[in-house]
Length: 296
Image (tube, rainbow, N blue to C red; front, side):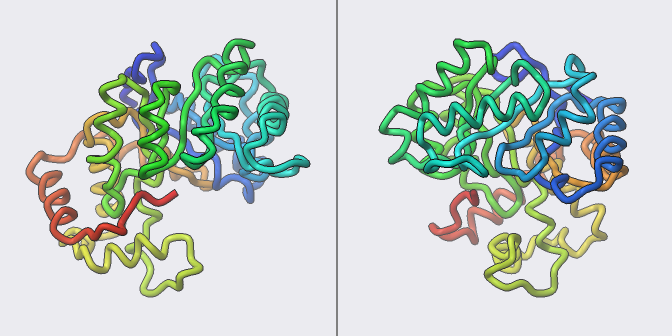
């Protein structure tokens, strides 16, 4: 698995990372097999969040003994199970401490603010909480996870080392809006949702379905390759995201023990041919509407 320098942090991250949201409903046995196999195969980047159910606890339970083998990112801001409002400074401090306890570690490599609005960012308290956590050694770096103009404001504060944002064949606003600004600051960049929630796999969805907005967009984009077999479409989607300038790693969530290696084999084929990448970008620029903003 290729390793890339993660911005100006000095860390190296595997091009394919693991997103911890999917394992909240998985058995601890499956999680143990999945994550240890992934580490053995070259994965070294794990991303989770305090609001992902028991994801942090499962990661801590099965991987804390291998803490030197991976970089560990988590997110804060949604106060799951803690008394107090989202974005309250004391609540943020409590959840960061709780994350460390759950993950069975003295520190994480990055703590990201999780989809925090520009309005809250402007108040400054949430950024100060992360800065204090960094000063205390609870995290090596601090970051922002989110999209669109909220992410643009966060980047321009120059407070953050890392950006986690949506980049995929159905979500390309960041390529022009935020990634250039992040690159100027040599930030580490994580692409979330790199396979667009495999929205092309569904015949129909309702607005309540998580993948609905991507499904609707793809029905209008009508990329020719969407008619290929499912594995080939996943390959193109993953390689498109990782071919985007500035993206260091793409996180994919799964609870299936063999799925990470399957995706790693696709990524190992390297960047898309420039012609194919440019064709996907051109189709997006032709069809995308102003309201096709980054999906949180």
